[in-house]
Structures are given as structure tokens and as C-alpha cells.
Length: 117
Image (cartoon, rainbow, N blue to C red; front, side, top):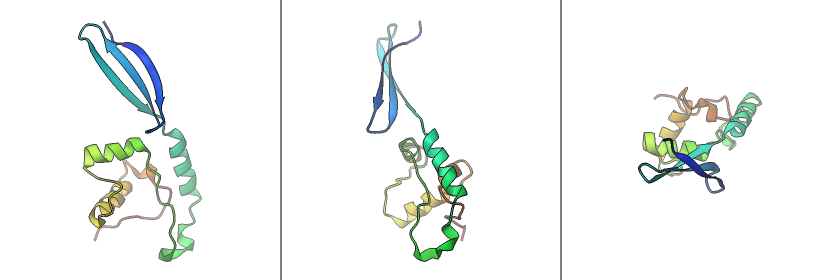
């Protein structure tokens, strides 16, 4: 017998939809979180296409990425990377990860964020 959906709620703290399931056979509850990041990814792509980073040089601070909460958690779980760390080593790891083809869609710029040394 499949699990029954007993509740579906939006969680404003991590911008996810929580699905609460109950399994009568095993008497266990399961919570599944789903994230809709399509708007963020569309915005990132639009910003990258309209990127004006080259006009300002290195003296100007500019927006280079928007990372949804689900990817912050994924980076922590799968890469042991703290996105909010001020450690320069962690910051370089984040920049290198954003250049990876698997996560390049999180960038809002066409400029290279990291280059091998």
C-alpha cells in the first residue's frame, strides 16, 4: 500500500513546498521538500545575457550569482562547502564550483569567476 499524502504546506523559511506522507504499514511519516527555482534561473540567465561586467573592471562590485536555498544545502551536503564562509579557501571553492558546467546556471554574469593557477 502506498504512502498517503496527509498535508501539503509552503515553508516560507526555505521557500519550499513540504509534502507530508503517512505509511500505514510501517507507521512512519515522511516529509518531502520540493523547490521551484525556475524564476531564479530565468532571472540568472537574463542577467547573464545582459551582463555589463566588462565595462567596470575589477574596482566595481557587481552581482555574479544567485544561489537558491536548495543549492546552498546541496553544496553543504555533497561538497562540504559553506557558501556563507568568509574563509578565502571556501570562497575560491565556491567560485570554482560556480564555473562547473553542472552549476553554471547559477551565475548572473558571463565573466569567469575562477581560473586555475
